[in-house]
Amino acid sequence: MRIAATADLHFAPQSASALRNQFDKVRDSADVLILAGDLTNYGQPAEMEPLLNTLVRVRIPIVAVLGNHDYESDQQPELIRMMTAAGIKVLDGSAYERDGVGFAGTKGFVGGFGRGALTAFGEAEIKAFVRSSVDEALKLERAMSQLRTRKRVVVLHYAPIAATTEGEAPEISAFLGSSRLAEVIDRHGADLVVHGHAHHGKVDGRTTAGIPVHNVAITLLQCQQPPAAYRIFDI
Ligand SMILES: [Fe+2]
Ligand SMILES: [Fe+2]
Image (cartoon, rainbow, N blue to C red; front, top):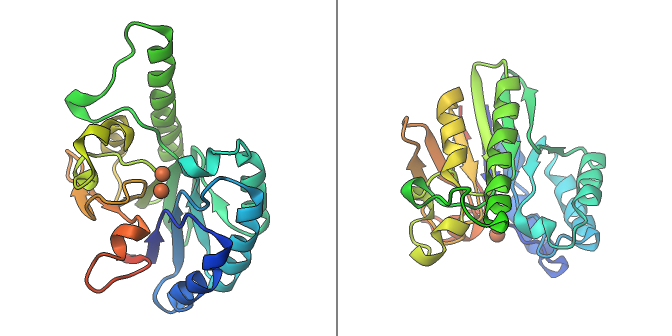
């Protein structure tokens, strides 16, 4: 299966025609398109509607997770409803199988990596924050344990490892993802992990167990040679 993956479209209606051009050939080079969160800027249905009108033209199956920007207006249930009605498979702690390939996805959350990970100690507010990070790891665990396929793809918005966030300011590292996600991935095994969110990170990394992780934030892909709107993976 050839998988095209991108993230962080941060769609604005005035960029519809540019986006259409960027994706008009994706069906020639991929069987599935992954959108790894931050589809919109402010999580407004009014942003999602023209985006979906553009994505309809892609004409290959689309698998997506939401990102933090898609939560900004607290309208994520409506966004998911709209996306689902348009035929997009939205993963939120859930799994999807297609042509023998399993996709497990969730948004993920912040919290930091390795020794820099925040732990649930002290104030109730810290514990609630860490709880959100743990909950997203549990959602990924649930999604991955549902997969019965030999080939497995993990879709996240937040980064599961620090390596693909390198290039961002070190001060914000803990807000770019959580290594709790990578622990789950390593326990279950996967062939490919894609994420976004770290717009200025690095494209390639690996988990401790050696599973390939790719940051597909569109801003980052457009800085590569040659610049691209998505990356193609063969699994
Ligand atoms: Fe983003
Ligand atoms: Fe984001």
